[in-house]
Image (cartoon, rainbow, N blue to C red):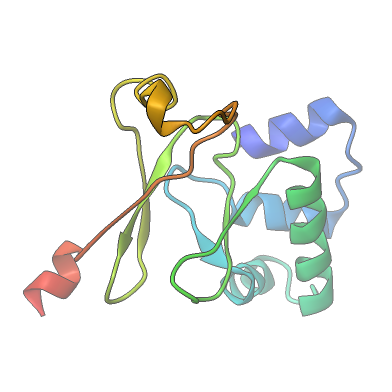
Amino acid sequence: MSDLLERLRGRGWRLTAQRRVVAEVLDGDHVHYTADEVHAKAADLLPEISRATVYNTLGELVSLGEVLEVCTDGRAKRYDPNAHHAHQHLVCSRCGTIRDVHPAGDLVANLPSEERFGFQVSAVDVTFRGICPDCAAA
C-alpha cells in the first residue's frame, strides 16, 4: 500500500474505488501530475471515473493537507503527494518537469535575523529553476 493510502486510511477517509484510484495514481517519489494527467491515468485503471470526481478528490486531498498544489511559472497546477516530507522543487524552465529536492541545512535557520524584517518565519518555499537533461540534449 502506498504512503498516501496509508495516511488516508489512518485519517479514516472513506476510500471509494474512485478515491483509491486517484491516490494510487499519485503514489511515487517525484509525482507532479496535472489534474488532467491524473484523470487520464486514473481512467486507465477505472474507465468510468469522471473528470469532476478527479478534480473534487484532488481538492479534498489538498484541503486535508495530504497533497500539495504546486504552481510554477503560470503553468497548470500540479499535485504533489510528498506533503509530509520537507522538500523544495527543481523545475525545468523549458518543459516544466518538476523534481523534489532536499537541500542540506535548515533554510529557516539560515535566514539571517536582519533579513527577516521582524517576521516570524513559519515555512519556506524555494523553487530552483534550470534546464532538465532531456531539454538540454534537444
